[in-house]
Structure formats: C-alpha cells, structure tokens
Length: 323
Image (cartoon, rainbow, N blue to C red):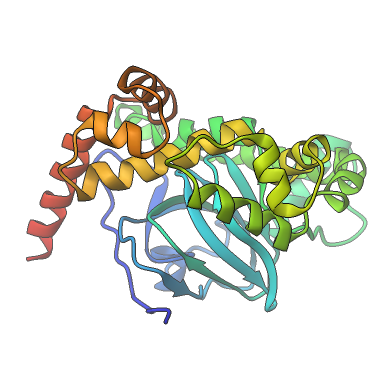
C-alpha cells in the first residue's frame, strides 16, 4: 500500500539567495502562496525528503510554467505524466526531466531524494530562443519529451546553484538567475539542436519492463558478484546489445550503475544499522573495505565513516526540531 504524506522542508541557512524551498513536491512557496510577481519568469526552488517510506505525490504548480527538474541525489522513483508511465527505477544525480504546462504528473518515491526545480514561463523561453537563433519563435515553445535524461553539464550547473555562497550578498539573486538562465538555455539546446539525433537512440533504448527487470536483478544480487552476462540474461538479451541499450536508457554503463546501487544500499545500512564498514562492504558486494571506501568517496564525496556521522547528526537535529 502506498502511503501519502505531506513533507515539509525548511530551507537551509546556507541556501543561496534566489533559491526558494518547497514544502510540497513541485509546489514552491512563492507560487503556492500566490505572491509571485507577474513579471517573474524564472522561479528556482529545492525539494528534499529524507524519509525512506514509499510515498505517492501530486504537484499543484500553476499552468504558466515548464518545470525543469534536476535530480541531485541517487533515488528511485516511478513517474507518470497524463497517467502514462514515463520512468520506473533508479534516477542518478544530474538526471533531467522537463514537464510542459498543463501536463498532470504524479510520482511514487521509493527512497530519499533531493531535486532542484526551475519553473520557466513562455516569455522567458521565447527570449532565450530569440537570443540563440536571432528570430522569435513562430509559435509557443513546448518541450514535449518528458523522458528522464542524464546530462552532466546540467548536473554541474545545478550543483553550482546549490553550492553558491551567501557571500554573494546583493548579487545572490543575480547569480542564481544567471545560472538558471544557463540551465534553461541548455534545455532548449537539447530540444532544438539534438532532438533529431536523440530520437532514434531513445526509440531503441530498453523498454521500461526490461529496464525494470534488469534493475530488479541487480538489486537482488548486490551482495554477490554481478556479471554483465547475468544482467543481460535476466532481460533475454545478448550481452553487447543489452549494454548499449542500457546505457542509452540510464546514461550509465552497467558496471557503473551496479556500483552506484551498491553504494546506495551501503548508505542505507550505514544509517540504519551498527554494522562495521567491513561488514557493509562485504554485504554490498565489495571485495575489500579499501575498495568500498574508494568507490564510496568517489561517488558520495566523503568517507563512509564521515558520511555516517554527518547523516546521523542531521537526522537527530531534524528530529529535535520537529519536537
């Protein structure tokens, strides 16, 4: 049974100026409260949940906006647009998803997540288009493809927004808007410059059911060695064909995807158990503690021990603030 909850996210003191918070998924406070100026064509906000319960959510964002979502944390989600299944499975940092106005969406989150949202009006899209091509668009711009696509350039831009220092002072909003415009421009570049080349590849990527079967196989065997042939066999495909189509569907090679899933499982164990790093390394399929620590730091940015301490301190602080 899916439990529906209302999550509230209090903005961090280090959140850069120009970036708001969302108390509900895809419902920034400025839009929700109706206090957004009519000439504000770009709203940037962050939504985060640390809860690991399976939760279904539906946004209430206004119909004026394209919503650009940039995932900042590995998670797992089932996503629908107009009741059509768009994605079911893992989502890596840097994954981009664009929803056009008046397209109802809903999502089932299976783990903790963190997402940066940009809400963009039609006038701003038209302005960016005219700046790029030297002419006004012939009609309203609609980014039609709701697929989840990994884009390293957008990942870096998203992190630039989140990691910006409050020392920007009076220029904080200018900084946020500038990076936000760069993200919008990147989205339009993908839409108008690469859509012709991406369409054939995406059409030949793994069907949702085969991708789900592959991920389910990986998740069920994380404590053991996992070979490319084993994953491919679970989908009924040859090894080389599967590897190529899996990379198109996820943006990652199968080996890299497996490593990320192992680290996600390790993070859950670090947070919810008292197991040692060695025990966790072995239970998530790493041959040694040193290999586990190396991969963990590369993907997460800090050692397993430091991450566990920081994550638990954060959970305690949040629990105390709720009380």
